[in-house]
Length: 114
Image (cartoon, rainbow, N blue to C red; front, side):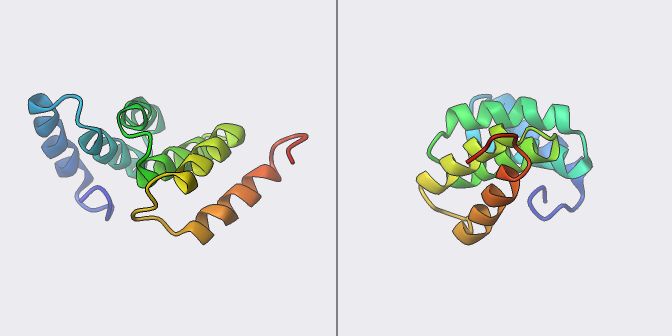
């Protein structure tokens, strides 16, 4: 539900219940964060995405989500770093060309970026 952006309140409730059973489950943390992101609650999204990123540092999808969040918050250098981790990660569930475009676009918004 969270990934599709559907029934976000329900998605949040379901994932919160799952996290009570497995509080360190990175996939659950990412799902909760993404539901908050889709709802526009970026601070809550960041709290859970940063935790998910620490739990799943090689998970390309989680790192891409983190990059998307940072970009939306105007933190372009952090976004680029997360997207670069996504490209170096497991490569699952990502479009590398899309991420490379995001990186190039964000670099244009960072002063003195190469």
